[in-house]
Amino acid sequence: MRKNFFVLICLSLLTLSCEDKLSETEQFTQYVNEWVYDNMSLLYYWNTTLPAYKSSIADPNIYFKSLKNKDDRFSSIFESYTAISNELNGISASEAGFEFQLYKESATNDNVMGIVLYVKKGTPAASLGVKRGHIFRKLNNKQMTMTNYKEIINYLYDSSLSVSVTFSVLQNNIFTDNTPLAINKVTNFKENPIFLDTIYTIQNKKIGYLVYHFFTNDAGDKTMQYDLALNNAFGRFKQSNINELIVDLRYNHGGAMSSAINLSSMMVPNLTTDKVFSYTEYNKNYTDYFNSAEFKKENTESPFIDNFATSINLPAPKTDKFPVQNVGNSLQNIYFLTGSGTASASEMVINGLKPFLPCVLIGDTTVGKNVGSTLVNDKKNTRNEWAILPIILRYFNKDRKSDFTNGFAPDFVIKDDYSYQLGDTREALLAKAISQITGIQSAPSQKALTFSTKFKSAIDLNNHRNDLIVNKKAINLYLLNKIK
Image (cartoon, rainbow, N blue to C red; front, side):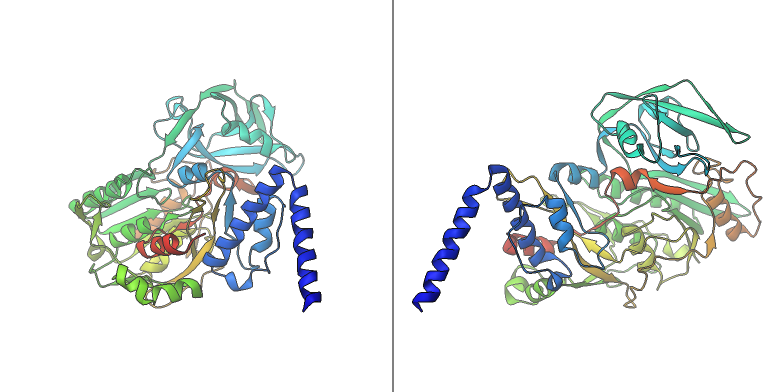
């Protein structure tokens, strides 16, 4: 007994001695990593696979990666809670005004070029005439290459007031650079996720078309302004008696689950409050808590089931309710335009609607994210600005289907060729959807831009919207009562 006690004392002294030798920075890093581990052990969907805790002064990015399950492609860690929280609400600290896709310029050189996917409304880039399909190869007069593009592309996002963009014209496989264009940036730019809503009348068909770039209720101000604007768009669709609907999610990497439920509720046939949108599976910690008498005293709704919504409700203390504008009974199909980055909340909408009416997918195979996250920060230590976005659940539709980890394959594979502006009925994906609706085959684009080696988009490089962000009362209660 004495021997064991002596060993324990020695080990304790050794531990104290080692900790004394740590610098203040190392001690803080050690604290951050312990905070990360504690919260992952509580919240993480795969928490039973975590390695045994060991004190660590490794960079938190590296430490967090060491905790992730082999099947986890999506959990993330961030150095600034404020920055990632803003990004998830569509607020850019420094916004140049356009999203882009990067390509290797040619098999014969190492140059990189970017193609503008769309331009954000209300930005200087839009007023200067930057458009979808424009090609750029240089930023601040520096040519992008495979070795430097990450550094060069950061000129679009750094804190500088403007960026010089050299757009190029491609003719006969030869690039000709235009005069560099100075584009002023917008600080704390708030992007509206509804890029376009319009109605086409073609061959006696009333076709609603929505371009929706990410899921968020509002800009973080609890006004629900974006969900209400979405509802108003569907109100216009309903008033115009549309009988066909095209929802463009090709650049939509995800976002708030609550917005996914609201959007789906605008499209499902025979909308009622008891119609199941999704089922949710959590780790044992959550499951035991949600089944406990403690939880049931505070919450009457089941955290395991989400029904479609019949109204959009402003958060307390406000009591305003806005009836959901639903067009589902007018539709035989829904046409979804998808891309290789379509993920998360976008896929949740598709998965949730599949049991209720045919969903026709046009474009590219989606990401395959059938899991959701919640954003966690350290509320007890303001010095710790780190935040984690761990996977905390897996979702299923009303038929208990969640079998799309390889993504949803499109019914019609169509290459996004950037030839026309979004909303132009000649644009490749939209034209294919219209041809399926009307039976009139669209002619192939005569000016299609085709490049072979696509590798990174603006979302991949700078944003983190490819998450299903879950903000339920039940989960918030768990975080309040259990989180470290």
